[in-house]
Length: 445
Image (cartoon, rainbow, N blue to C red; front, side):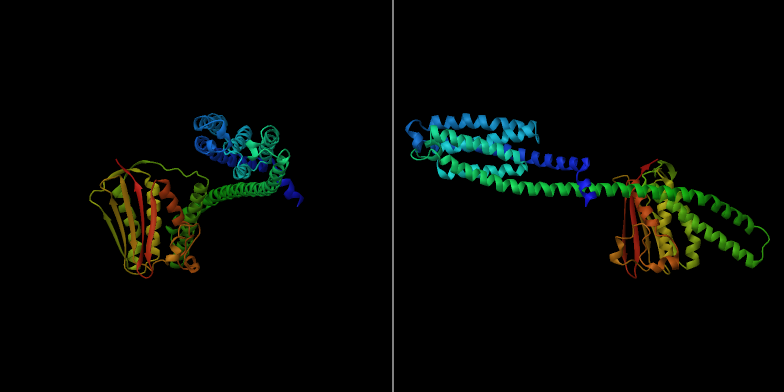
């Protein structure tokens, strides 16, 4: 509890609270600026139409009272309007608006000949001023109206109450009702301010939690990056020596063992490379290298790379490129190759019969290219499609055991495509197959 109290009094919490209060004040300032214009026009209309039929009409007509509404309404309206647009959210603006709003109440009571109904404008004004969540504004406004009632109640009671007899001390009754409303509004304002302070404290806690999460994420990414580099060095040596060992005189059993070492090491190396890419992506360090490359040769390499595996599984591997596809383009061939390898590898992995089809199309009216990797595999359940691009996600826990893989490939592919300015999507039907598609902007070179 003591720790929470200290947290609520933290300078950052106070800063957030004041910022919230400022934003509220700016909105209320602008609302009152429009209200001032409306009240100004209302005073002119009342002065020209209603005031002459009250007791004031004995001394002045429509023109004179219309001018009273025009002149005094302008004096009351223009300063707060100016402050609301030039000094929004400032304390001086709130005070000027409070004074002007109560002056409008005084003017309206006068223009209506002291009608009791117009006195409700005072209470409505106080309620509106309470939106500032500033109790001092209420007291300033109340002081203005109480002093006005006291002074005019003695000097010219007709302008306040519409009658002159027996009203000398009536201002006390009005003052009591005003103070009563102030007390009620002040309690409500204080309650809301306490809630806003709690909101500020909650926001501060969220900010602290986010900063801590980012710090831990950075530590994790740095750790993964450093460890991956440390592991990759001896792993490359294992791969190299296993290649050398495979070229020496070995019996069949030894050849099998060396092959197992090489395959396991290669799988581990791919996993480490994926972890390095994830680390770079999370830290914003992964860069896209635009250069000129042979677009057709890249896809032919992908086709050759997976042809052997497809033949082993009895699958067809088709490659179709639009005739309008240029030979050379500007882009990051390494990252494009990485995305295609991930998608085609998944297609081959999860397809047991049928075919894999790689299609490349170009939008004739733009520099956008579209890739489609279609398979006739087992498909993906609709509920799992949106989860595919998450880190370490695999649709079925048995997939890793049966097919291998870390579940990072699609997440990396999505980030790479988006970093290159494109989008990736997937469409699948259970038992019929899956189509991964992505688009990229490429310039012809």
